[in-house]
Length: 147
Length: 72
Image 1 (cartoon, rainbow over the protein chains, first blue to last red):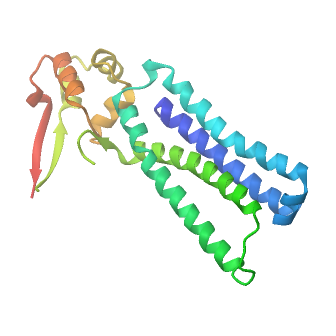
Image 2 (tube, rainbow over the protein chains, first blue to last red; image 1 turned 90 degrees about the horizontal axis):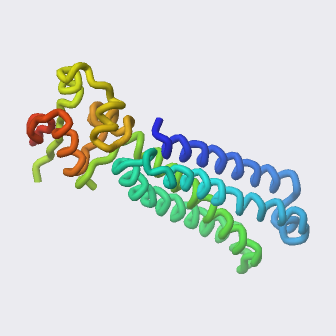
């Protein structure tokens, strides 16, 4: 397994664990109103929010800083990974839009706290999408001058 | 536009050159061993630069390492 591939895998696993942790926190600590009112709850969520992109940056930068561990194929895979990131972020935003529209259709307005949550999820999904893009690149293979 | 694929004889050439290891080829061509593995598995088509470097390691022409095939 290539060093970049290995670190993208670790980054993806940590990202998934953080997402599961976030969901578990929401289930155990209460609903969206608890997030709005409980400062401790918000701090936990913010910590996880920062943790995922930070882990990704550290993991991938560790590889990029060692030129002997990375070559043209790794760079090509890294350059193509944002395609997956773009699609995953797009789908997450579509999911948020549909869910919020359906849940709050009667009220005609959406609680402002959702803006923060959408931002948190976009950043985490974007990071996970980048890691996933790298892993897909290694799995499917890449070619110069083809796509 | 016709579909095409680029095949290579890297595994064969390594065998012909005193069973050169993937690690040695990678080191001499300036890439990682994982890239040599991907090339041999047909999961990667290299840049022109790397293709020339690999051909030079084996002291053969580019066409003796890589073959362009149009698919029907």
